[in-house]
Length: 84
Image 1 (cartoon, rainbow, N blue to C red):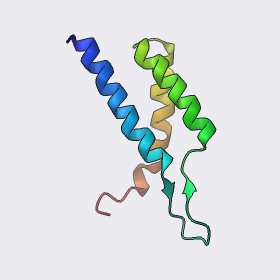
Image 2: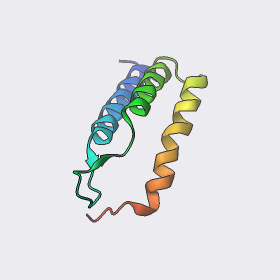
Image 3: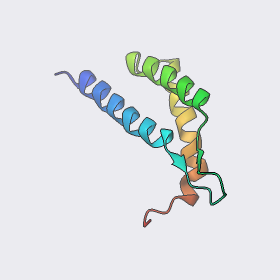
C-alpha cells in the first residue's frame, strides 16, 4: 500500500470518527434533550467537501476543509474538559 493510500485511509477514518461525534447531541441542561453541535446541513456540506479533499489532496478543497474544520476546534478548545 502506498503512502498516499495510507494517508487517504487515515483521513477517511478520522472523518468517520468526527462525523459520529458530530451526529451526537450535546446536553444543554434545558428541558429539551440536547441539541446538535453542528446543523445537519453543515455536516452534509463538510462531508462533500472532505470527500473531495481526500480525493484531491493539496488542492483548494483540501485547504478549505482544513480552514472550516479548524473553526469549531478553535472555538471549543477552551471549553473542552479532557478530564470529563
